[in-house]
Image 1 (spheres, rainbow, N blue to C red):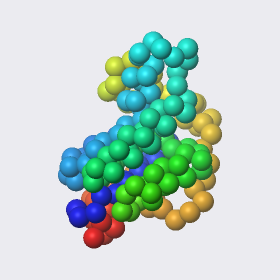
Image 2: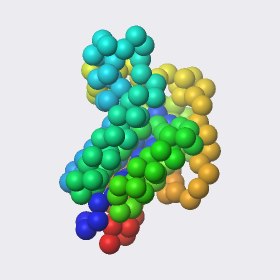
Image 3: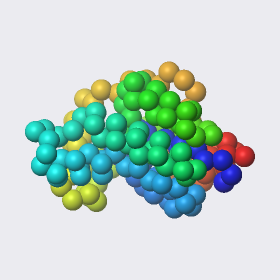
Image 4: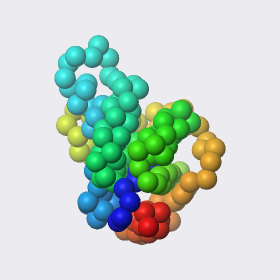
Length: 173
């Protein structure tokens, strides 16, 4: 890839963000920023009175800026449930990278989505995964601008990775 950019993978828990983000980052030799990892590390430090809410995203934005300024493409993976967080990521990409690819992963089959949420294994020590009810009840605002939407109920993980890579390569020149 010629120009560095920001690939933002968002979506509710259980839609496949981690499954897609790691191979995309590996293929592009990009920095991989996983907000769950940042937030769990902050919580594990013992320096915060409660589990972090916004600070994980703020750290992610700062790390993404640093990598983009160095000419390194960034794959950022997080639920990204609010317009304010999406706008903040887009601002980082627009100001510090050559391009930004916003991707929302969805799972259109509720039974499949629920099964994924209820059968996931923890891959970050200490991380408590949300229950299905917490996923259903989570605040998640509708996206208000064009972005790539991939339904992982009908698109395999490998196909999703390829779609993201194809769009990123088209944007990078």
